[in-house]
Amino acid sequence: MRLFRLEIKRILKSRRTLILLAIALLLSVAMAYLPISFEGINRPNEDGTVTELNGLAAIKYKQDLYKTSAGEVTPDRIKSALETYQSCVREYGPVEEEGFPLAVYIEKIVPFRHLLMGLPETFADPLTGIGADLMDIDPNDIDGAYYEKCAEHLQDVMRNGQRENETAQQKALEKYSELDTPFYLHSGISKDAFDYIELYILCLAILCVAIAAPTFAGEYQTGGDSILRTTKYGRKQLAITKILAAFTLFVVTFLVGITVHILILDAAFGTDCLKTSFQMRYSIINLPNINLGQLQIILAAAGLLSVLATVSCTLFLSAKCKDTLTVLLISIVVLLMPLFAYVAMGATWLSTILPSAGIGMQNNFLYQLADFNYLNIGGMSFWTPHVILISAGIELFVFTFLAIHSYCRHQVA
Picture 1: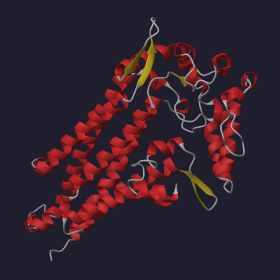
Picture 2: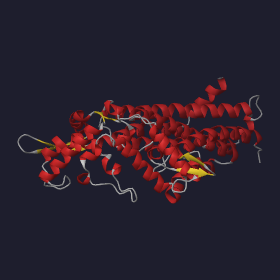
Picture 3: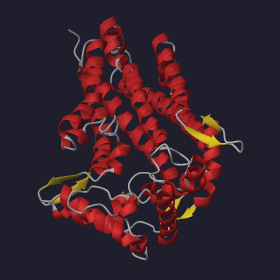
Picture 4: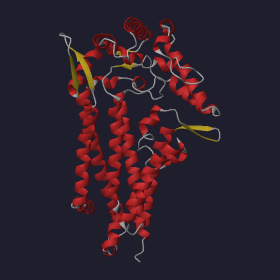
């Protein structure tokens, strides 16, 4: 424990480390503020004028509008919302056109528009997947069998996307059949808020890699390692202590940063909207049986696991390489490789089994939860979020062991 405390003090005495930790905390606040600042809506006044609301004022106004649509998403409520929408369009014209009365839009469309978000894809063309126009959907077709229709659409999507892999098709349908229905809706929080959680995790990963890079290589450069190796606890025990100290620092930094970030979002958007089913914010045929509050916890837990797996890889490189710059460059390449692999080739084993596979942009864990990517090998199919989590867990232990082993075997040139 004494070595552990001394190692923590040594890390925190570095000016570069303190600056990077301060940046991590500042980004937590700044990146939580951004999706709040993006919110906006026009409010009609009694005198015929219009007031443009932004930020917290817009969120509060929207919350009052959305209260009327909160509750279980039953076929009857969807049918009623569609009838209201079609009636307004027939009377005033398309909602998207400038001539549509703002007061009517605010009073009759905005409160219930999220109830309608699943209809275009539920009634999409089974061959092309092109969503149906709301005006082309017969409200009577919604009666009773709405969720069965959603399952049929998922079957079409999986058949088109995994045509040669019946196992993947079957697994997706089985997972969807386990969802709790009817879904629940309480509109409020935006998709941007969850996108920025993932973007913040990416920034944290980069900062943690930068802090971890000199853990072993920095002492190789200064020659201090040659002295430390001659002490009583100068090999295996020292390596374990350094790694535990680094992990402790990163876990605390991650938990503090992500907690502050999420608390700011929840304080702004409210906690009622966190009861909303995942399917009502993304796609009506999404597979996870969770709500948005559970999604926040899952993204934080998966992000922490991916960050620690990425850091363990950096520590291994630090124990192998002779200078910090080489470690940092290779680690950044490893960190960003899944992102570029996903952009170039889509969901492949390469983009999902690397330590940082759940961190990034299009490839991040949130988008994998919202997508229907399955990886196939032999007659088996694996959903990409499961592959990402299992791979990161295994790599965390493997790279940590390799870092200790490499440090113990290091020979001074």
